[in-house]
View 1 (tube, helix red, strand yellow):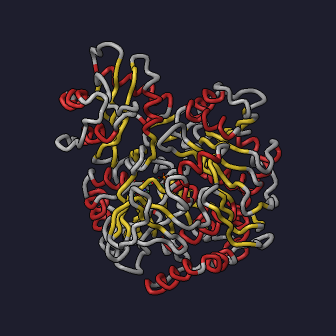
View 2 (cartoon, helix red, strand yellow; view 1 turned 45 degrees about the vertical axis):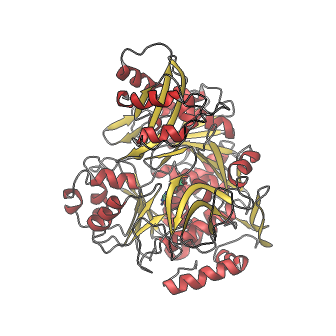
Length: 635
Ligand code: WTA
């Protein structure tokens, strides 16, 4: 069984061993899984290229470890609980046996439709059990899943389908979110009109039953295709370093990139961190509220919990439907023991008042988790007092799409937690802080750029189709280090607190959005000449999107203009990237080399205008005053 650390002194011992002798440490963890062939080498790495391989030469199938391995002893244990959007509808459960059969049937459907090992399959679906089943079915036969968050637009979906040349798309007809019903299939149809030549088949899961158009010879219903298949399907032998999935994420420049994760290391690391960070005990019910369209859903709704033989829950809806008590109602209803969510949800629910959690019995909760963005003290305290009743430790887990699993986190119940601190590196993780010159800061109490100086099993292997980009973005800033893009502080005890992104990535409600992407979208508006986008502090979302826009001609009605910009951004990216504020400006502050000086724009957007620093090096210093003075006109 995967090691579960039981005390702080044990953590310290394990951590030291994991750094002194990483290969021995990770080999001991890997040995607890089912391998078709044992690995020859634990790790081979070179951050310069980068070239990282874990459990080299090992053969396995991750679904054998998520499913088959548990059947003998826990086949009748609940693997998955699904809670629908509408609380008056019944919830569903799958035992490990049932999930195994469902995955095998779906895997046989994939094969029957021509999907082979290495082919890419795109998912564009709401949070329904079929999404988990489909993802695991891909892994069963060695197909690569690429899940796209169902809030992205047709154009964004098409970009992702084209980049990874998906052969199949699996979607639903409609998606229920709160009181809304979203035409998912229609978005897929629109996307596929945008030259997605690789797609041969679309499998449509019927979620609502309302009519949708089906294209002959391309579109097939899930209910016609899946249930008639055999309930067993051999697990395909995969190399440790074969691709498991692609997940697109935003960076500072250009289009979103497809982060690639591979089979062996990802399996070992997500299971290990799940068991330790949540201190999951047999019989517990674990609930992560993330969407499977993001990495948190991949690693800590599907893979980590199922690898550990846990009961994991999926929720279709939103925290405020039918009312702001929904999360707490679900916790009471299913006696949830570990609850994992994002600060933005906590802040939104906190704003609705204490009466909501006080209506429900939350006594089952043992551990609370936070992820996706820095948690502010007010939200931390509310979560601790009103949800955890001061008895459930909060694990503020820091990690990224690229890291595959949780990197820095408290271990609940093993030590006192420090509010707003992610605290401890996981065993095997070697973080460091570097200064602007790239020198590692040795002093314990310090602030700097967060890097990782030794590989860990679930780290990014490449960016799909563009390895050079992976090197450039993550491994070129500092020699022999992975650069996270985050800034962090370290206290006297060596505990980490994450400050946030230091690059041009904004974190809106825990969603990563690249400023360049939003700018490109805004620039498609016919009246826009140029734009610059920055983040600014937002009470609920953590960060909001602030856009400075140079327009062609005078804008008579700024509110109508904002609406039209929203339409363009929604079309190009999706509603999550809509700017919260738009300020029309006559120009943008630029350096002599023509680069926009975002530092100034960030400060103005945050209202921190007295302290803009030196602007004399600008090509057009006079523009700064004009931007400052028209700030109040932002809509
Ligand atoms: C931020 C989400 C502070 C950080 C798992 C990181 C956090 C980015 C935390 C990755 C945390 C994530 N405290 N900031 N506990 N967790 N972040 O790829 O800026 O969607 O770089 O992965 O979210 O976002 P991603």
